Image 1 (cartoon, rainbow, N blue to C red):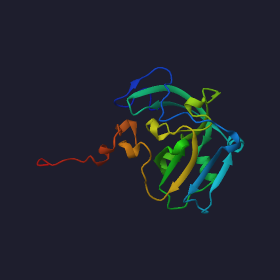
Image 2: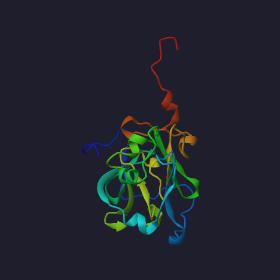
Image 3: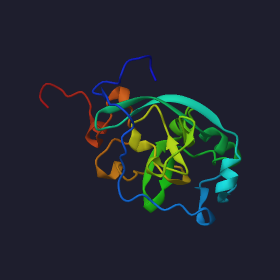
Image 4: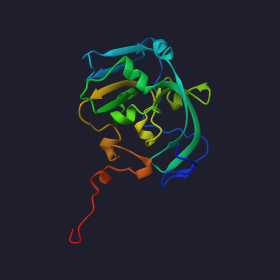
Length: 200
């Protein structure tokens, strides 16, 4: 949050609307894992079971959530595993610049490494003191408070370390690859906006 102000173009909404693409997945604890793969420092793939993820050190943040459609919901308390803690357990190679967050059904969201390693980026397990509901991402949801919501997939299953950027699900469909709500980075055409000369 940046004080009490809303990002430009946003309006406050009540409650916490459910918004996602595709069906709600069925959780089966015996088949669930969280993986870190791609350009890891060791070249290995790391994997944690549901119980192992729940046992990792946790942190709490309070934040607003900004949807690229123009709504903001305020004062969410999330508890979960800091993304930076995961990186300590599964360090990236030195030339990693971006990550791809993978969720159920192949949903993906690309992030700059600096956004993923922010001290407020969280792999959330709880919301307002209660376990996440399945509609809101149980058992694990990525929360990147300083970016639009499509950068925080529900039903998180993996983090891929990348040495170059690659567009995720919504980014391939016309949404901005960075997604800073304070700069109104909603759509991909804005990525190429530059000052134009008088004869352009």
